[in-house]
Length: 103
Image 1 (cartoon, rainbow, N blue to C red):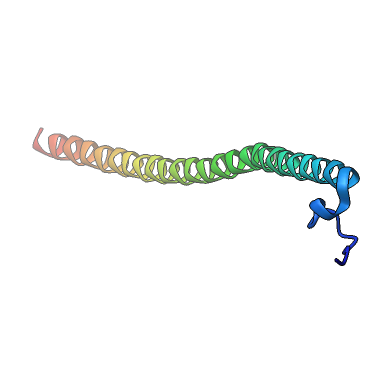
Image 2: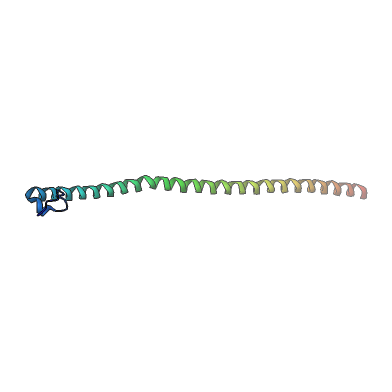
């Protein structure tokens, strides 16, 4: 019977040392799995603020666009009010002239 030397794969051939090695190998595998889970959790926790930061940046861009739209509306309203003031002043002057001509 040939002894392969790979006690992790063939612990029965290795006797007591092989069984001990198999236990240690199993525990190392378990710890590696736990380390992977912890790494995945940490990665998710690191990525969460990045995702939030992206959402905040998108929201700020939308707010900036809304403010620009409101600014345009205010500017056009101000221009319309100024135009109305000019028309009203012109009408008032015309009425005064017509009134003066009739008197």
